[in-house]
Amino acid sequence: MQTSEELKSIVREKYSKIAEQDIAVNQSSCCGAGGSSTEVYNIMTDDYTGLQGYAQEADLGLGCGLPTQFAKIQKGDTVIDLGSGAGNDCFVARHETGETGKVIGIDFTDAMIRKARANAEKLGYNNVEFRQGDIEEMPASDNAADVIVSNCVLNLVPNKQNVIKEIYRVLKPGGHFSISDIVLVGDLPKALQEDAEMYAGCVAGAIQKDEYLGYISEMGFENITVQKEKAIVIPNDILSKYLSSAEINAFNNGQTGIFSVTVFAQKPGKSVKIAVVTMDKLPANACAPGSGCC
Image 1 (cartoon, rainbow, N blue to C red):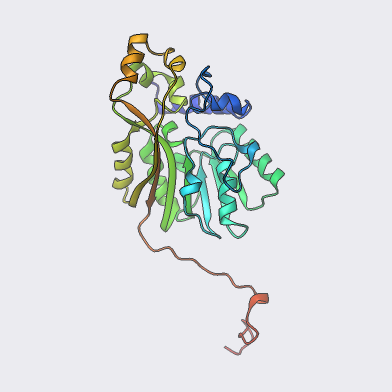
Image 2 (cartoon, rainbow, N blue to C red):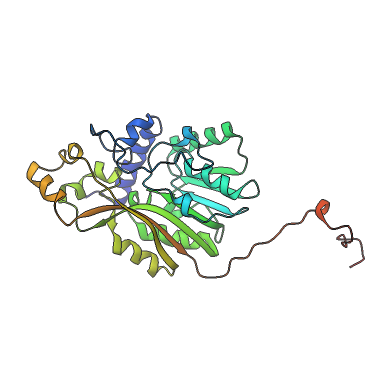
């Protein structure tokens, strides 16, 4: 099995290519990174088109859920999207947080950052920014975000505990996250586990569901909730690259399950909102700062 840095390099290279390829290719493969399936349907993606703020040009078909739909974003919130790609979830989050809020997308792929920034400029969004960086060491201050979202990204990260630790650090007390990801119930066949292509395709990088939720609990998060769960079926024409016919039959009829889950959790503490009142909105009988009447 490759080292963490080798796996990161594979993911970076794959997703650089994905940034430039057609959405139809991404949607017919495992998170856009595996070989295209001839069975034409989206393996993992959910339909964003009904969500307000959706920007088609920013949707590369790489997700496995709709975390922003469940993220309970309020007007004025600061939202961080981990693995922001071309900006799709950031733009949906921007609709929810409004012009008074702020959305920060973090991605470690140059091509994705360029694409996302171009999309934001095209849409005229001045309160959405994209930062290049590794989500195991987020380019964000402590207690910076009200909400963190992510869509099918943690399964691509070798050290998931580091990311969960960083999420805890960056969230404000009382802040929360809603993250869609791929998890397992039962062990994958060895060929899938060991193949770097399948790692970049989300599946081989997934961990057991109980282990995933356990990491979140051990970090100290509260109110841990699985908001949505759906089974993922990998088409046989993709499996055939890794398994024999007999192994495919055993895999499809065994106890192993691959699932997309959307998980919510909250950092302990009380969220504090500070209202900013400008001079032109002061009541007529208010005491203006510096007037000496207070």
